[in-house]
Image (cartoon, rainbow, N blue to C red; front, side, top):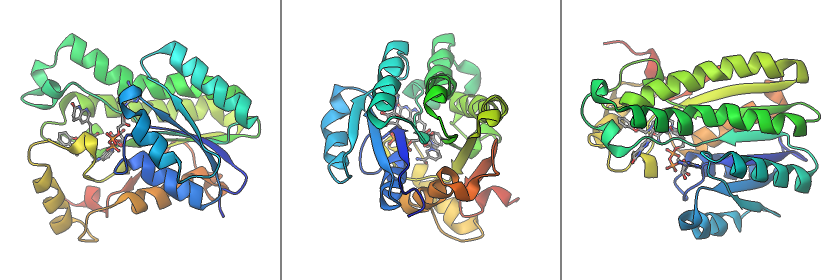
Length: 254
Ligand code: NAD
Ligand code: 0WE
């Protein structure tokens, strides 16, 4: 029970395949009380169904492009729970057309949307939860190798992940004096809603399976268990880090 008595807010659950749901399951198993948010009415039913597997869950709408949503959501979680011990940010989005073709063709609007939803939202969230993390806390986000290497078609999402990972380091400095830690898990490819329809995604899974040290792909339990470490006091001296949960793939050369 590594998270016994802790209260956490998790953004980014869309369905049972979401990495954020893998983290919610593992955090619940370890004794945490959870608030889950969903992006829009379209996802409400699916998230409420999943939340019914948790103990006394709080389920709230939150679109991270809206300051009012972020304000209302964090205030409601803070007031209901009394304090917030951890936050999981599992949100990313780029327009589909930006993940096809060449990075050089990225539009201003496409760049703004990807960076706003996938990177700025972490900082916007950190500012709002800081006052509720009365006994310190842990913030965790999800990133991908495409934020420091060129991965075909990841394009503007790679630029957004670079900004997100750099935000993790700056946030760690600002929030460190309050004993709030900020880290990122860099996951290997997993078939989720955000990965569906990506051309040659099956090929990427195959390449990781063939070339990673562990010779396998990763799943939601791999991500959930790693997250428990970063959300728990076991990682109390670790902040500002990007840690890979990718079966060792990122270390492999040609
Ligand atoms: P997913 O589609 O299940 O999750 C993405 C979530 O982002 C969804 O819940 C969606 O509702 C939410 N979202 C999008 N726009 C939003 C907005 N405006 N406001 C609020 N929420 C919004 O897919 P996933 O793969 O679980 O993605 C979760 C995180 O994991 C993302 O940051 C993604 O980049 C990262 N990641 C995924 C993989 C992978 O291969 N699946 C690998 C590494 C990192
Ligand atoms: O971060 C991601 C997914 C990001 C993502 C995916 C989509 C598809 C549908 C963001 N926005 C959208 N918008 C859509 O309309 N991953 C790490 C998974 C992923 O996505 C890729 C990958 C991998 C891996 C896109 C291209 C190449 C590789």
